[in-house]
Structure formats: C-alpha cells, structure tokens
Amino acid sequence: MSVDARRTRLLNNKSLGSGPVIYWISRDQRAHDNWALLYAIEKANEINQSVVVAFCLEKYPTSNLRQYDFMLRSLEETADTLKHNSIGFRLLIGDGDKQIPKLVSELKPSLIIVDFSPLKNARTKRQKVADNIDTQMTEVDAHNVVPAWIASDKQEFAAYTIRPKITNLLQEYLTDLPDLKAPSVEWSEKNDEVNVVEAIKELGIDESVKPVDWCKPGEAEAKASMQKFFQEKYDDYAEKRNDPTLDGLSNLSPYIHFGQLGPQRLAYDSSKLSVNEDSKKSFLEELIIRRELSENFCLYNPDYKTTKAFPDWAKISHEEHKNDKREYLYSLGELEQAKTHDDLWNAAQKQMTERGKMHGYMRMYWAKKILEWTPDIDKAMEYAIYLNDKYELDGRDPNGYTGIAWSIGGLHDRPWFERPIFGKIRYMNYNGAKNKFNIQKYINQNNQQNLL
Ligand SMILES: Cc1cc2nc3c(=O)[nH]c(=O)nc-3n(C[C@H](O)[C@H](O)[C@H](O)COP(=O)(O)OP(=O)(O)OC[C@H]3O[C@@H](n4cnc5c(N)ncnc54)[C@H](O)[C@@H]3O)c2cc1C
Image (cartoon, rainbow, N blue to C red; front, side, top):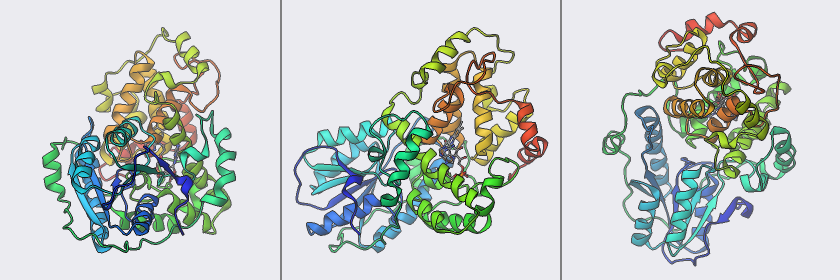
C-alpha cells in the first residue's frame, strides 16, 4: 500500500537533490505505523537511495526530566528498530531550524520529509528550514486519521461541525497500516546511539520534575498498554470514563503525545473489536473527533494559547465580568504547590504533579477553578498552560491548549447561564462533582504515593 498523496504537502518548490532521503522525525517518534517514515522509504526506493532519520533534541521553557526521560528512552528503542531495518539515525542536539540545514549541507539529500504538527513553534521552524535550503521538503500528517488539512480548510466551530466532515472520510482513511520494510538501499554509515543520561545532561534540563513509573516509555510498551486497555477496560469505557476514582481511561495519551503510538493504529484496532457499542462510540469520538478538532483549532488559530482565540460571545461575557469580586485569589506558586482551600482541586493538582497525568474529568474542573481564582483571564490561561505543560506527561499538546481554551474561554462550547466571574462560560463546582463521584475517595487516592 503506498502513502496517500493527500497526506503529504510540499513545504517548498525546490528541486530534488541526489543523496539519501532525510526523514526529520519530530512529533511522530516511532518506527512502526508511521506514514512519514513509510513515505520516506517509498520515495527512497523510487530513486534508489537510502533513508536516514534525524531527530533534533530541543529544549523548551518547561522541559524537564519526566518528559525527556520518557521521550529519550523510547527513542533508544526506535533508533534500534531503524538500525535493524538498515535505516540511518542521527541524533542532533539543538533546534531543528539550525541543525537540519547543517545536516542538509553535509548529506546533500534528495529530499527531506518531516512529520506534521499544528503547533506554531514547530510549524515556524519547519517552514524556516524549507525556505532556507535548496532541496525539496514535504510534510506528512502521520498523527491524524484524516489529515488535518483534508478534514477541513478552516477553523471549525465545534465538534458538531467537524464530526460529519471527518466521519464521511473515515471509510477512506481509517485503514490498517503497512508493515515497516527496510528500504532497498541500505544506509551504510554508522548510526548515532541515544545515550539518555548524556543527552539530558548536555541539554541541562530541569531535573526537579521526576519521571513516573506507572507508564513505561516506548513503542512496545505503548502497544502492550493498548492491548491491556482492550482486554481490561474498553468494554466499560462509557460507564467508567467520567469517574476519576476509577482507572477507566486508556491512559494512552502520553504515548500518543510523543508519537510512540499512532492514533490511526489505535483507532483502527479499536474499531475492529467487538465490545459494548456505547464504549466503542465514545472512545472513537474522543480519539478521532475530539482529538482532531484540537488539531484543527491549533492549525487554523495561531492564538491558541491566548484569550484572543476565545469565541466572541465568551470575550464579551468575560469583559462584562472582569471586575467581579474574586473570593479567593492564588499565586502561581500557591497553585503549583496545591495550597488552595479546595481539597478536591488540590488532589487533582497533586495527581498531575506527582503522577504526571490528571484524570480527564478533573482537568475540566481544575482549569475552571483557575479561572475563578486568578485576577483575570489572561493570567488564568497563562497559569493553566504553564502547569499543564510542565507536569502532564501528555503536556505541550494541541489537546491541552484546546482543553484549556474550552474550560476557560468557552471554545467549541455554547453560552450557558450567567454566573459571577464565569459569565456565560460553562460552570463546574464542588457540589456538582460530589453528585457525580465519591470525591473523598479521589482525595484520599491522590494524597497517597503511587496513585491509582
Ligand atoms: C483543561 C484540560 C487540559 C487537557 N490537557 C491535555 C493535554 O495536555 N494533553 C492531552 O493529550 N489531552 C489533554 N486534555 C484532553 C483529555 O483530558 C486527555 O486527552 C485525556 O484525559 C487523556 O487520557 P486518556 O488517554 O486516558 O484518555 P482516553 O479517554 O482513554 O482517550 C483516548 C484518547 O482520546 C483523546 N482524547 C480523550 N479526551 C479528549 C479530549 N477531551 N479532547 C481531545 N482529545 C481527547 C486523547 O488522545 C486520548 O489519549 C485536556 C483536557 C482539558 C479539559
């Protein structure tokens, strides 16, 4: 099966060179089920060239040991798989927009393939490289079931507007993926090794946010976790997914975020199983529709991290309530250390800082309370994004920016009843949570180590 051309887009109009094909692997950090790698191999075989995969180890403001340890240990495995398939691997320390042009000068490749990300920083860097080199560069959407630019050419209003567009295309796109096959021409040079300890030291990242042990990194672990979810939890997903005291979710978001598990693999395999229909429907709704709606939002609205991205009705409503008295105001430090008057919120915050993954239901409550307890919506967005990106193993993801804009700014939602501070933004409170699940149980669970 060849890669669907609609999954690829040219980032420049430069001509083809004569050397190997470079795959700049960035977001989809896996060797299997990766359309970008499959495309690189397909192109290399057409022109009788070898393939080399290059990863740029970049540092971000909230980079920390928890996320980098998870990412690098998995990359070790991916590099190994590439080697066994006669594909080159280069580990470059530094930003892609500086490192890839250097590699291009060194290898004089035929073409460069990069995987797609809707995030601003990633897109800017990819485009900068494409503009500054003399070789053709193509991006491949290896992260979405329906490529983001095919699903829609504009920012969608809500789930109900993108759902029919994606659903109509699933018959074409929700397919199995071909196996990884070594390119016909072998990479003949020595591959770089991934030395996790050295790489972390070289980058000088924050080591205060510790790795977690409940979620083991790597493609093999990701697939094993997926199978475990299918066997033990999938059937009850609809019933249990909104109860934060139960371990009813797939817990696959860290793997998806780092590209260790391809969403299409998960979507295809889960769609084939015979389980409770409500569970299948709601899981695929989250995994495909909601996740790809987040991609759509970040792709078409570059202000996704700010209040500028809120819908007009929410901006007006926030303006009308900006001077409402806040009963509680907390600094970023107080929030970070879970020192609020609300034991439920503190438990959620601890679940995130210690476990590295807050339950999905609590993420909404958590972000909405930040709106209630900060002086203005700009601060609320800033604090929520900072904490989410720093502590969540799946942070720095389109889903995070979208979930926060949904909670604080009414994105993809509708106006609700008027309330102090929230205005028309959907409200959540302690008593509402109390009616939904055993909050004391959740608090107790998260006040202990080795949670859930
Ligand atoms: C304030 C807030 C912050 C969030 N931050 C993040 C984040 O940083 N990273 C992140 O991946 N998700 C984020 N989400 C979305 C969602 O909460 C998580 O994707 C989900 O809890 C991950 O757990 P899981 O894989 O066990 O979920 P499951 O319920 O098992 O879902 C499977 C997959 O479906 C997708 N999915 C599930 N729920 C959503 C959703 N509401 N929106 C979009 N896609 C979804 C995810 O890819 C998830 O891994 C956030 C939501 C909110 C409200």
